[in-house]
Amino acid sequence: MTEDVASRYERRHVGVRADQDRTEQRRDRDRLLYSPYLRRLSGITQIISPAGYHPTHNRLTHTLEVAQIARSIAERLLEKAGDDTEAVDQFGGLDPDIVEAAALAHDLGHPPFGHIAESELNELVSRDEPDGYEGNAQTFRILTKLDVRFEESRGLDLTRATLSAVSKYPWRREEQGKRSKKWGAYASEYETFTWSRLHLPEARREIQTLEAAIMDWADDIAYAVHDLEDFYRAGLVPLDRLKLDSSELRRFLDAKSGDPSEASLVLRRLLGLAPIDGPFDGSKKSRARLKQFSSSLVDRYIRGTTLSEDLEANSGIAIAPELLLEVDLLKSVTRFYVIESDAVRSQRHGQRSVIRHLYEEVLDDTRRRSRGSRLLPPFFLELIGPDRGASETVRTVADFVSSLTEPQVVAYYNRITGTSLGTDLDQVVY
Image (cartoon, rainbow, N blue to C red):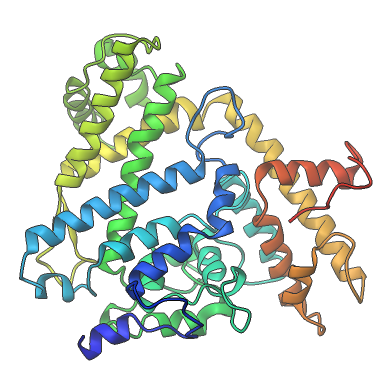
């Protein structure tokens, strides 16, 4: 193993190892697979609540599919590269286990109810803490501080390679521009974040690694294809009418920004590949044809991913503009027919209210009590510590609220507002 590779797989706190049979990258993958933060995603919204009537994706099933797609892309790129290791080394290296680990970790920081709660928590936390709240930065905090693997250290003690591969936005928050919208680490974890990028050339430390770019693209693919599949099955997305009815296609295109003529050509061509001629009716024929279409799309986007030849311009993968537009259009279809529907909008209003009320109640209770808290569990009180710094208190209350599943949030909200008190023997939460 070369010095560069050894540095790439270095850990900050090397804990006790039960065996020496696994590689460092496989050990990272396994630690994530068994994380309670990963299991928690089964109770978190992907597009709509997982508690609904139709068996739509939740955030965990989405994550598992992202991991499969990402690993498939990585393995295919390595196969095509063959002995030409320089082609992948120049972008920071490529290992399928690292890519899979990054995919398993990429959504750990999503709070209950997804992006609407992320936005609300950012507004609330930003009142007292300039870093606000961001799902990707929260993921990094979970991996390096909140999850537990060893008693003597914080976090999962992952390698530099995996921590870098998780980072979609490898920079701190700034006041303006794109870095004010998305960022990869809070100030409280920035020392560890800086350490995690040291295996990269200095010029590439604020650029996605190749492994991160693969994870990011796999996330887009899964969102575009499998969420679309969910809502065609549920009768909310009329794929058959978009394919066969020009007036329906026009209605969608009129609501979408960008060049409608180009979008029309691409979407018509794409839907022309779909063996769909009517609404989903649950028959064997409907099921098989839908699965054929979604599978062919995933395969199309995996095969359409290649290694870039431009070291300076990007993070290592090249995707044909036509494929990027296809994925964007498929995501826009779900956004138009589902995310922006009146029913989902009104539900989001209620979800935002629940998150706000819960956060403010827990924060107020924790601030008022010099010792302990009636509402914050012991693990989170340990994070704040005896000094009770204002910044640590705000950040830790956000940690607590964002670590809950959606059923936990609703149950806890009902309990503290008196809507539904439960019984005296109910464990509070966590």
